[in-house]
Image (cartoon, rainbow, N blue to C red; front, side, top):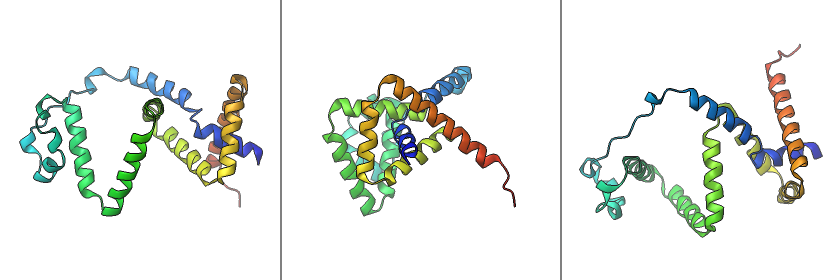
Length: 181
């Protein structure tokens, strides 16, 4: 049971991310630069009226916003319009929680999100699976695992990473093997 707790902690903290992120970086470097296109600006008048209403605080400076930001705002407004009232309330609460975080914590979360986005889909699925397993643990076990991680030396953390990778590889092998009758 203790080994299972350790790998959950390791997975939660994204210990496998640096390895997979390096693989993703290598794959990105080999991709042709021509595949990266520059987004074209969105005309304010081309937005539906409901989106314009939601984004009215940006109306005056819309043309000076980068095209990527314009598109992100338009997508966000569209998602908001498609949400039911309960989902909107949840989004408001999460945004308030986000704004209440210290800037250092928000920056750390942003960096982790960027690293996660660089992972291949299989690695992303694995991180999500491990996080869900960690979240299912009782709060006292999660606190214990976090503390064990924080108290570990760099060498102990490296060993935890290695054991996690070994267990993940073993699970992948088990999935590939045909079952015997």
